Figure 1 (cartoon, rainbow, N blue to C red):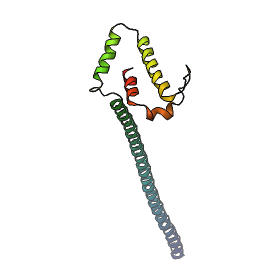
Figure 2: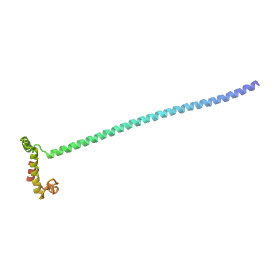
Figure 3: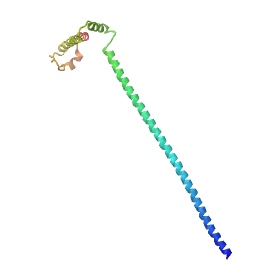
Figure 4: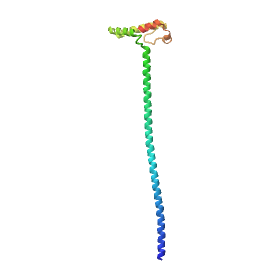
Length: 161
């Protein structure tokens, strides 16, 4: 009977041992799964950080391009203004005219008087070229059609006004 009790105990311990082995295997699998999950979380965090860095770089690049576009626009405006100034004022050829205007203003003549005299000279040319009576305070009539047909002597009058 003792032998049978020992055999039963042995069999019970064997079953317990098998259960413990199964539990140990499951514990190892859980640890592996936890490690895999931790690695996946690390990769996920690394990818999220990388995404944030890429977004920051993209935003910086877009901002840099916007600044370049803005700078290019500013430079284009400056170039256009320089070209307009070059076409409107030729300091070398118009120096005598510029000197004449400076002399007029230095003689203590009111600027309004100089402006009104120039305005009247230009208005006389416009009336002569367009053949319309121009009404004060209104847009000059016929000027858009006659701009390309102004004779040289009238251009000189306008320039010296």
